[in-house]
Image (tube, rainbow, N blue to C red; front, side, top):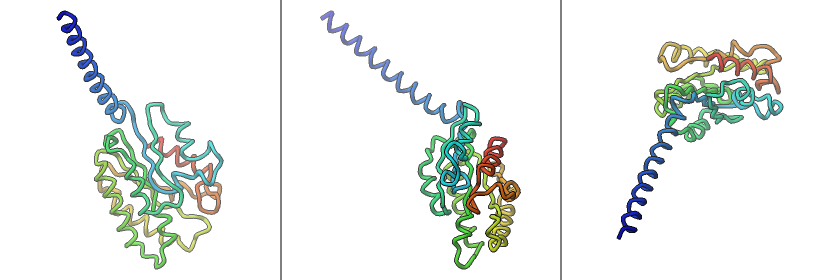
Length: 217
């Protein structure tokens, strides 16, 4: 009988330790994504994923990893050649636990849509962009959102008027619209020939400028 009591007592203690451990892990997981860590989420196109155009170790993601503080986590979801519609697949991979004030989402998309437009109707394409921004802010309402405008590719001058209209729409829609939404002016940041590779993609130099701007923000 005595052995039975001892076994019951030990089982009860084991159960308490198990429950305590689960609660501790859940708390730590929550804190990892919130107060203890600042998270950088990269959504969009090759502006934030230029891996196909520069050497390994010099990509935007590589440079970010090298330069950011240890208490920051990068979630690199941007993909080369992405259009507005493709970013939804990236957004699906974002954990809702990252909906926190310590999270900053960087979105660079629109350039490929402009280049692929047949009739060059900027307003219709920009409406699709607005819908994407709404989807991001709906999923992550507490996170900061930084929108990249579109730079002017030096060898795509026939698209410059469309890009100018796009950037004007972006300023009108978001410059003073929401304290959690900011605009990063890529058109002003990337304008030297050395900023580009393959005519249109961010070079190592261009990537360094983008990374420095992200870190400063």
